[in-house]
Image 1 (cartoon, rainbow, N blue to C red):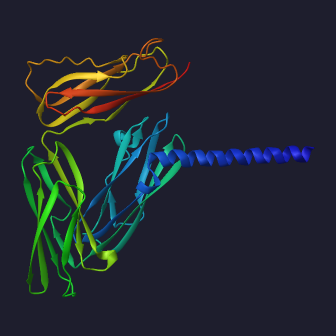
Image 2 (image 1 turned 120 degrees about the horizontal axis):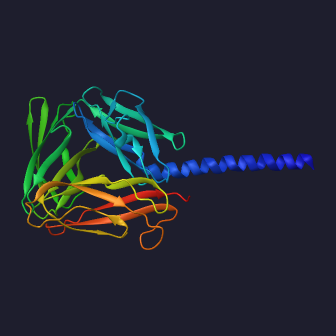
Amino acid sequence: MTRIYCVLIVVAILGRIVAAQETEVDWKQHVISAQDRSFDFKTVAKRAIPEHQFVLENPLLETIVIESVTASCTCVTIDFDVTDDEKSILKTYEKTIIPVRLRGDMHEGPQNATITVCISKPHRAEIQLNIRGEVRTDLNIVPRDFIDFGNVELGKEQSRTLSVTYTGSNTQWRLVDTKSDSEFIRTTMTSETLVGKKIFKINVTLDESAPNGRLNTQLTLLSNDSESRRAIPISIRAAVGTVISVSPPHLSLGALSPGEASPMKNVVIRGTKPFRITKFECDNPAIEIPLEINAEEPPKLWYSVPIIYRNPIEGEGAVHEGVLRAAVRVTTDIPDLTPTFFVTASVLQE
């Protein structure tokens, strides 16, 4: 009987360990999904330093603290400061970006790096990210990192020139096509051959029909090279018309008790051109936005918007236990520009 009892205890303990492991795997999966943990730059020209941004989000009630972010080799650099609390401390639903750049200016040939993200709270854990790509010395691309259209007036066409120079020994090498991930990007291509090199000029045009907002897309150049070296991805960025962003997009008010008011915190609403805020709408009536809206004031490039949540004991907007998650919709004087941000708080039962 005693032996059976001991066996049952061991089984129960093992079951708890397995359950804990599964729980850890589950929450880490929601911080960044498995398919988003790897990125392939494919072909990278010599001297290029392309960037990829890994996005991590806190799905937990507890705060996540990123302790360190390290790379397995010098072929990548990581622009992430763990001493910056806004980047390394994530409250519920908050996100952070880890920008990783492949150093085509320092390395050549196939590159593969593992980025290890160490989390100290609420549970010790590691998340492994992977970067790979091939740095080719026989290709020179200008601009070397990405095509930036900058701020583009809505309804206006804009063009940039991309130059690709091949200096390798394959006399048959050439670019044969381009493929855009966006319907608003079109290209035309010309080529010429000089002594020891082939030069391709690609005219990249942002169409006048591009909608208002930020455009982050990719143009892929296709060569007649082997399958593994055929694709050459080029990032494209643009801000069309007036783009309005909110920082942070998820505002955490911390941990509260039922009936307790939160501290006042601010979000910054910023535009690429001056604008007016005309109205705030929130799906939780207990959230207050004490910002005076004056239609007579001139438009501004940015607004600092105070937020406070007065958690009532009962009635509309009350949260007794769990997570407050409310959406705030911002109406502006620019048609179709209605950015939305989220307000969160953890409510603990006393």
